[in-house]
Length: 429
Image (cartoon, rainbow, N blue to C red; front, top):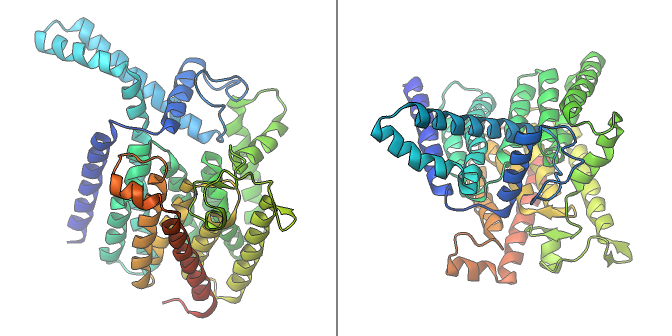
């Protein structure tokens, strides 16, 4: 019975992936255009000087290297399929083959097809993430019964923002979350060195993963020893060196530090970049620069101040609690949520790790299921806000009301404070 449920789960993952590919074909966000031009450049020129040279028709590459390895490999696969179809077209004279390849080749050579093909890695990562959510939930539940973990995996794969992000928008956030979930799984299993390596890979895929890192680092420190820390540090240096090596611009690897800092801070200097967070509650979406003064200090000062203050509070509460899996998941939820709520230059997709941790919290309490579903809907509405694809007039009118947005933010703040209360007073179940 157990194996039949797992087989059915895998069948649904494949089915949903195919549906996502079909649904996502007609549209994409302008972010996917950048991915397309980056992948074309990488396919033709490789990695060397990629960060240094301007990429035609695209913004300068700002992400760490791992995402560009994915784009490079995906582009090579796309070119292989294109060449393979051409080979059949030229070698096989049968009319049905020639007729079909004559239709397929012009389509493959369109920008739309290439952008659609670039969505495949993220959609595959969605499936892998659902599997890891199942496996982690199984570890957290301390039972071999797969019912609840399977339900949580299905909840994730059916979540509207998961579909919207990878299939409609064409974003790659599910890739860094995949490595973050792998790191979390190995951390729960006490394989600290492997967990450290995958956490670093996640951060080197997208720096957003760093906002969940404090709780990982705390558990590494408490559960490890100097030998584990030293090995983790050395392996991290080696990994960073070899991941960045093909992109080396000058032979001086110190360029990595300012580049990563710039990548972490984002491309915009606005305090609010369409995030339903605390600053949107105060100022709305008025494109206010993060250096604007607020009570005599730049807004970015207050953002980092609130982040450091509440981070310290979470760590203090964490130190007072028993080090268990409940503390790990709840703290990961709070650190991720805090970054989204108060940091400057935050955009809507910073919310994704919060959703992941909220789903995993459902293992410990049924009450978190309602919260997780609510957060999933909030995340979807934030992704939809301002892009408005597909256009649905009632929803556009609803989200164009700033009072509604402020109510949503107040709900988010209440949920965050509820999480702090849980970390303070309640015991693990």
